[in-house]
Amino acid sequence: MPGSVRSLTSLFDYFPRTSVTQQPEQSTFSAWRDRLEALKNVPPVLSIVWHSGRHVVALGLFFRVVASLIPVSTAYVSKLIIDVITAIVQHKTTFADVETHLWWLAAIEFALAITGNIAGRLIDYYDSVLADRYTRHVSIEVMRHASQLDLQSYEDPVYYDRLERARVQATDRLGMIQSIGRLFQQVLTTASLSAAILFFSPWLLLLLVVCLIPAFLGESHFAFLNYAKNFRQTPIKRELDYLRQVGGSKEAAKELKLFGLADFFTGRFTMLSNQIFDENLRLFRRRLWAVSLLSMFSTGGYYGAYVWVIYETAIGTFTIGTLSFLTQSIINASNNISQIFSTLSSIADQALFLTDLLAFFEMRPTVMSKPNALPAPRPIMRGYEFQNVSFTYPGTERLVLNHLNFRLESGERIALIGQNGQGKTTIVKLMTRLYDPTGGRVLLDGVDLREYDIDDLSREIGVIFQDFMRYEMTARANIAVGRIEYLNDLGKIEAAAEKSLADGVIERLPRRYDQMLGRRFEGGVDLSGGEWQKLALARAYLRDAQVLILDEPTAALDARAEYEVFERFNELTEGKMALFISHRFSTVRMAERIIVLEDGAIAEEGSHNSLIALNGRYSEMFELQASSYR
Image 1 (cartoon, rainbow, N blue to C red):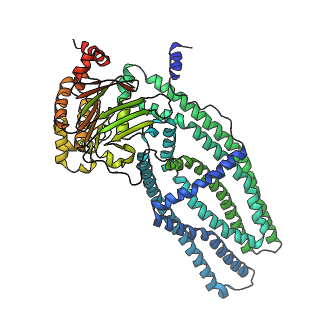
Image 2 (image 1 turned 30 degrees about the vertical axis):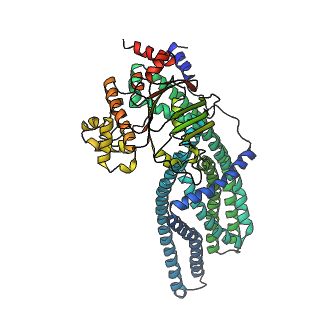
Image 3 (image 1 turned 135 degrees about the vertical axis):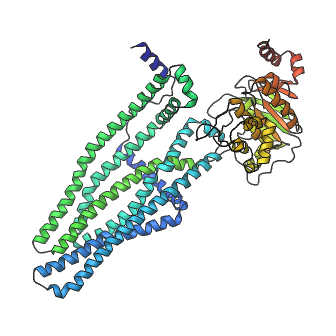
């Protein structure tokens, strides 16, 4: 094997195991059981559809009822016309005797054709309107529900797979909704045609149904196999989306070129996409041969019934009009019964896909406000207290925090330091109640945080995380997200920008506060990391909360800008509770109290001078960083 190919192959081992190798298929019985169980997903989805547009659904159903009665009505009027003409040809009556009656029948058939045409167009119209209303409604519901779930959900790969399928299902299940409408119309049409056939011979109808069952079973079996295949392919499709994004993103372009990674990512994408293509092709070929053979039964059923009707007409049992009527009814009923089976199979298949969407909507957060929860204290008098707090992230056994005890007094400024993974950001997540502790309690003014209303508590906390969002919106909106009700209050936004020193950044923008930021949209202007960070700080100041938490707030700033920000920070946090996390000791030493975390517990705490005098862990880290500047 050439060296370059060998190196690419070995590098692929560092990607997640997302191979789509063949897996044992379920038994036919198991597949049918799952399909029938999946039909329970239909009523909840119909409820979603109904709430997305009640009058649109009602009008669509009304016009489907009208359209479903057109085929049998038209066939019957045609029968009457043919019987009248046959009587004239056979000299059983004269044209003059039946002229008025004949033209009335022709007018009725013309009116039915016009009605059917109008009904069909109105059905298409209301289907299109409903599609837009449903897509909008369910997308909003998915966004709203996702925002209510626990933060831990976003750190779980299984949840991400479910969320990805839910997002796709939210908009890609329009086919099922339209299929349900078609099924309703097909059932009514088939019922009217079947009643006509049943009147002449029950055996004809039974023959048509029995001969269509094999094709239906075949279609259903392969529909289930397609669902199972798509379910297996979800993780690899997520990786393909990631590779597609990395291979064409602005953020990755520099390293792709400089490190020569284009062939590596393209090779990985090609390998995985080929696996999916091969698996899809195998299933398509099997379906082609099997369904084609089984469809012969339905064709045979139709022609068997057709031959019987011809025979009965030839021996004089049926009139020519009845021959025409039954021929049209048989072919329409046969087609509709086949379409009913196919539509049912499609609905069952689509219902299987809806499992994740409905399971997603059934997910409930564990971190939530209790009934009659307390409002956040205003003002905060005693501050935060961590009492014997332990924390383990879901899916792991490692204690990130281990029986931690500390206080953050009202009006106090403290800093958290320690190596990565020692629990600094976890403390912030517990203070803001993004998580609840695994053990122990977090108190605010002596009351467990779980007793407070989460939304009200959040209003009193301003947080900027190290991985803050860079919103591809205007500069005004980027600051206003700190307190979105101030979006149109430019005075407050400008004041917050001045406090964070973001006003200098905005002044240089062509459209100042109305300038679109980022490169996603036309006319957008990108900022440096430090400039983005100043905007993020402005959000925290706009919030004007009692508690200010900054996680690595100056990581992207140069030394001079950092000094200016913290000079301002000292003034702006006067009288507030402030907690910040930083690896820069020039920043940390401004705190009134410094807490050094190690192995999820407090190793040392005190002021900068007292910790230096202690000559312990803090002093060692300070000297290591200071030596790099000497």
